[in-house]
Length: 183
Ligand SMILES: [Fe+2]
Ligand SMILES: [Fe+2]
Image (cartoon, rainbow, N blue to C red; front, side, top):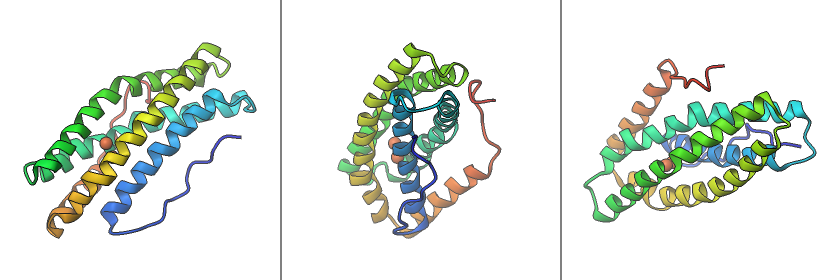
């Protein structure tokens, strides 16, 4: 039985923090689903195919938008306000770059399993990669939640409102698609 995606986390704080926390919740859920679809044996080929499609679409479409929000919108707002925050931002952006190749590989493996849910080598590699990425994401999200988001909360309310508005504007644009995701 694979995890059902769609539960919403508790809503605490303003809309900006709800949106950020929901993004983090989805990262945790989808990397866990990637591990389950690769490692679980009590899954039908159809369930594995559907889960692989959902994980591929999440990491091709929504995940890159959250990373882009942090790099292009949040980082410029907080940069230069405090040396400790600058260090946390540097680590955050470096880690995004470190995750990139592994996320692309995860998307490719899901693409393989979508078309051949019995592909044993793809399942084995995806199980290893999802285990690794699950740990890497947990450390990364903890850094952001402990250092970056609190710095955002200390910034002027107008800054936080501007960031939320910019994130919402981006969500209202037509979605970009990758070649793999365009199915
Ligand atoms: Fe991040
Ligand atoms: Fe994040």
